[in-house]
Length: 274
Image (cartoon, rainbow, N blue to C red; front, top):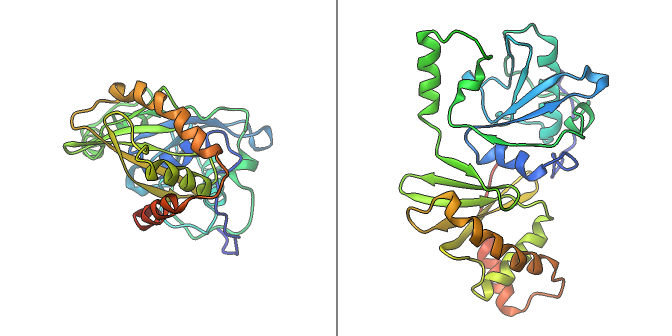
């Protein structure tokens, strides 16, 4: 890839269908896929977006012709959309059965918003195994099976909620969490959380708001759940919480003193991801 200057983009996935899910798969979901397709200009090719690929490959042109593009790639030019588009275009050009190896940073050029057909919805499937790395019908040798089994051992249990958009339950050891990526401006989300937190309304039944991640220009609030809570246990509670959260998001009045203190406390415990 040619070296050059690429402008920093705070929200690199803005304008793509399912922006919060792009960020979730890039940062907090261990194993998931979503189908995509390039535009006619780029060959109307089928693409399978994934969280990671073996050996840290950024992309793989699978034996059956499907191109897999990994969102959790290391490094970047400052515009993740440009970086991924450059890798995708490289993967389209290599022979089936070939991986794209990490290279230098790309120069200016087309972004995902230019390369992908934006009419295709971003429909996430959370995977329990990385077996999808292989084309259907591929013989699993002992080495392949061992490699997939080793990768699978690092997957934390994760479920995408059905009641709201871009919310993911996960179990880490003996603790359960909800991570809910937000499509709204990050400052508006922080104001809303501060309004709720100052009134002790930032949690919901069986869930305590504990902080948030920031990545790619959006906020991913995190709630810790009661021990042993399964994903289906919180669908109703999250649905009931949503109108309260939406009302706080819509409130444009200045924060009062309590909310300002709450906001300062929230900012102090943020975690910025890449």
